[in-house]
Image 1: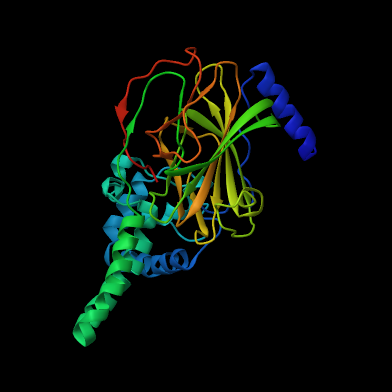
Image 2 (image 1 turned 180 degrees about the horizontal axis):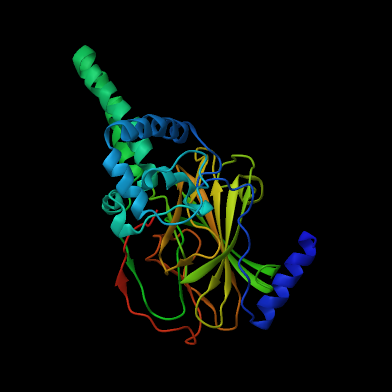
Length: 341
């Protein structure tokens, strides 16, 4: 089936209210960070040293982790001894551990993004070393690496958010400034008219991405591209990006798309979910490292109220972008449980 005919089928299903079948994972998405990166390669390289040490000196730990491990297939390009080995490949399926059996689950409770801890240690630690060296050699210049270090610590922060629970709400998928509100005459995946809201994330924003509604991940598409300034409208069409296609869990099962778009500085998109996974409203599913853009495409319906204007600043998970009618399922406001990667 051609791409055009597939999109027509999706559109017909959306228009008729049928549930969509879950798509296979895009073959170009081979890890949660498909664009790779230096810090990712360093962390994977460290994994070889760590696994050698565990096999040699922590054999009982390795055996215990093996008994607790779930899944019947290793889809990582290296042996899997404990949950750290599946960090970059959790969207591939295969081996996994329950949260209760993960000795490193405490990292989810840190005030920084778990997927950014390597950058935090390597880059932040490097800045700390340069600061101390500058203090020893010539203290007036020490403020330069110190400020850079504080920026890195700030960039990877992951504050908890209060997720609104009223029915019909669509929350922001990213922190930042609303730079686009457009009505689209037709979207093939949504099956009709749509509203697009674009959010620009500066280097000072929190860069975690959250689901706008409680939904199932139907499919994902990764596209390599340029790294234009994310403020430029052309960046949405030309820059590297991941499009996450969602279907709301509650009737009428609206389709939505969240696009993670790289920017001039941000070159690493992280998305740790896979088709078939369910996300809570405000649930974290990825991040973009440094300045970038996130777009939400949602279906237009009579009575849809867009609650933001151009220039507004929003916060992922807590700011309401739009509201549909009262037919959405009821839910209570709840505190965010943090990331699951």
